[in-house]
Image (cartoon, rainbow, N blue to C red; front, side):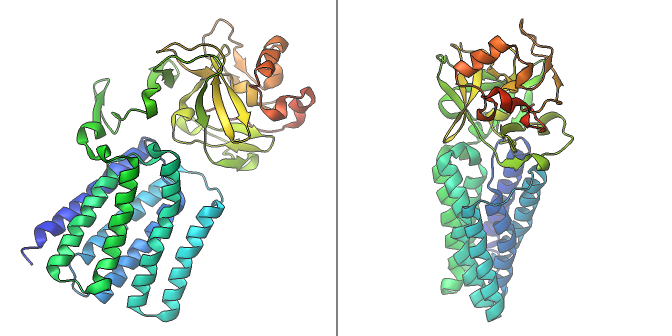
Length: 385
């Protein structure tokens, strides 16, 4: 027992550190976790730990699974408290159904061995939404946690080997967890484990994960009189796409009626739907009555496009009114541009010449391109600030 205890504590320490760092990134909107995967993991890890101990009674490394289960639930609660509910996508529904089927089969068999193996078989399925997410954009999960969890799995595997774990029941879960965690770590980049890239100083303060650079280092986040803002880190030409606006879509009646500060980041994208916060750079792009960019609605997404040349160091802005249909919503404007309208309202409140300027560049939401569509709303616009 004395020989394996050091590896046990290494495993616990790596897992605890991984969850702590991930929670820190979650609190600062530096990771964009897949809620479906975490919901499944929080339910399945507890069952995996309990059934593993039932099949391998007295196994010290089985306690690592229970510690991980508690921490996994903590992360899941953090994710769901910070996110509004939305129906799972078809892919997420498939993964949830597969994992629930494993649990149902376990209850039907009422046998610990089958319970453990069936839930283990569901683990790779539960990773599918996360794999799809990071393959689309690896910055969504760019956290040292994945490397720490991989090392924790390795330490747990060493504990199991030295304890003489029994065959498939002793190693199946360990190997599956190791391969799944390692696969995400490889996708997001092995350098993410480097503490010099994981921790950094900004404006004299110590912040977790802030030293990551964005893809191609095209933008930076700074401060203005309005708070956080997005700045160009390299030049952009007129007409060049800058960012894709992402986030879950909500019906207008499901958008919170009272929001303040960082939670007020909803953009109308159809007559009846809004795009919620993404936790990424698009949340931080401010309004200006004389913007250098605008939103363009395409078949494959909503994109921020430069409407004139943008120099390095210049703040990136767009006009919130170009997506707004409601006639009774207003916000005091503090953009301080020479052409400031003082109050941000719906698209109809913009000067006709400016309306035509946006229309000519295809920077008006499709439901506002006809003048008679402007008053069809009765909807609420939420700025991304």
